[in-house]
Length: 166
Image 1 (cartoon, rainbow, N blue to C red):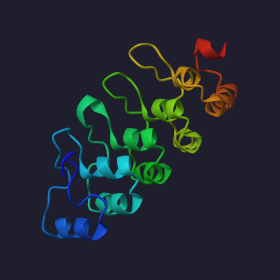
Image 2 (cartoon, rainbow, N blue to C red; image 1 turned 135 degrees about the horizontal axis):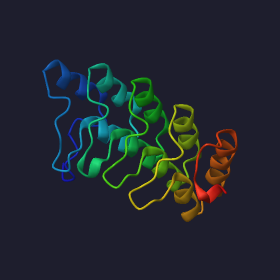
Image 3 (cartoon, rainbow, N blue to C red; image 1 turned 180 degrees about the horizontal axis):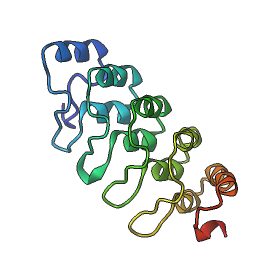
């Protein structure tokens, strides 16, 4: 495929055939994307569950440190996020610039994804290398509902030291 996406992405039966044939489940495209990453980006939870059950690496980052759960959060693919969490994916893993899955979900306004990540233990206080918090991301992109949710979490867990809420 022109974008480097594995040819079996999106086809559950093809994935099963490749697994049975001994395919490397963690093989990467030229951009460093694994099949797990592609499933998360494209919102294919049925294919993702097959890969995870077969032992594919759920935390392997692509270029820039972007993980499958970050990709799912960016796209708002809540079911993929839930599958990754149930397989013990790291909800707080930061990419090379310090952004985490909660940061990108908040920036994109994916309210349900933000809620799922918070319930799974995503940390509100993580900052990017530039010093921006999850709340900054939501405020900067005008995601008022997300910002309200984050503020409520802050009121419950006031040890978060962000000046945005003070």
